[in-house]
Image 1 (cartoon, rainbow, N blue to C red):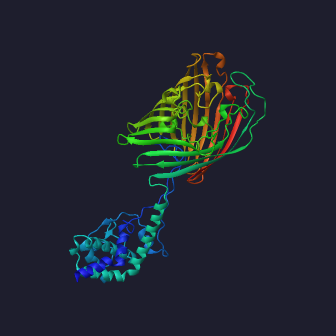
Image 2 (cartoon, rainbow, N blue to C red):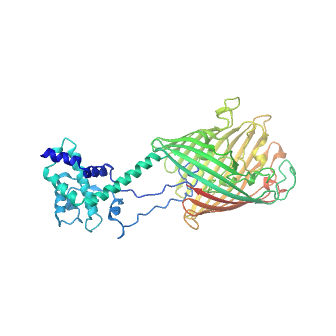
Image 3 (cartoon, rainbow, N blue to C red):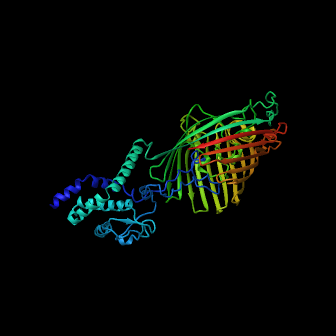
Length: 576
């Protein structure tokens, strides 16, 4: 007789359904609060790094749990709880379960015999209200699951025939509630199976960014540089209003939960305003300019921790850049959400150079001091095995940075790098400043020693004062031994969350790279250009930002014969 009852329970469809319910873990006990995925600002678009007194990207809004109302199914209320359940040993500990009917007595005996009900840490089911039939059914499910395990193990003899009969009566009494629970869980399991079957990857996450950019410049084209002029035909404001775009897709993969393999595809078409037929000066370039032939591989690098997480090691095959392995303290470094100009993002001589392929280590001694060191080769030269190419003979940069954060409101960075530019690949000032500062010795191979200091001070919650100073000593390595000294500086004001959370206002005043000393006196910049920029990011929500901005350059190319040039941009950033 006992064996007959045992087999009937094992074959019971309802019991098997209940076992399936609880095999899925804590679905009826605990459901995590949903939250949206953070970050793309540039963090979807650029490598996420530890922030160092920077304005953070807007945090995602937490989706609040909707409280239960009279027209909400109590089952939904119960299965959406987020408190962690802890095991109790007696129904008496559940103070809101009323011992007024036979079901309470039956459940009490089963709980005390098999320890199969869980309650909240305070020993109640949500305050001092009566236990609902759905909650009771969930508790009954727990006992059914516990006894099912006993029946399927060597301890089956611990289950008495009386308890099996009691469970059968409870099961019949609460059949509707058990069926509702089973239907809900089966639907969830079906949906989960569908998601697993169609998911992109178990280890990878896809994110992206799209920028629409409208812009124009105002003022006559620059006709003069340090070599004289005019060096092109005179033309009044030849630049036309344009509408460009940039689209990025990031595939971030983690194999351990602490590492990151980033693969980025990028397509863009935004004009370079320094072209000779447009403004004829590097000082008008935007931070987003460039053109690709469809989607191209933009980033490909791997990061993993060492030394119990104190160190982060980077190994890159493509587009591992100096601003990835070093940390700007300015809040304007993001191309998508920061300064609109190329110069206004950060010091161009310590955060730009031959880059793309190599390795770096970031090491935090404590929460106040961090050191970053790295070696990067041009990702155009690194895979080239021809003479004067490759990792060490082509263009390359060796860099070191020390970051100091004495308080959570002050960040100081000191950077040094030594760069080598092979013949025909010279870009000393990172595509900013005067043409002679960018190529002080023409296309001849050049080395440069670059020293920079940057500071950012959070004066108030909505006001940050910062800036940088950079000095470059360039040396001609081919067809001569001339030397040149190049300086640049900037002062910045940031207004985070000025109107609403996530907004960012910015002002930049500075001097783009200028040749202040050259062995050939005629190649020194005689005048001084001043860069003045203002922008404001209206963060409409976590996914859309609108960023109007303008900047003006006096005496472009450090030549007072050139008229002041104005550049206006309007960016719309979409993150997903």
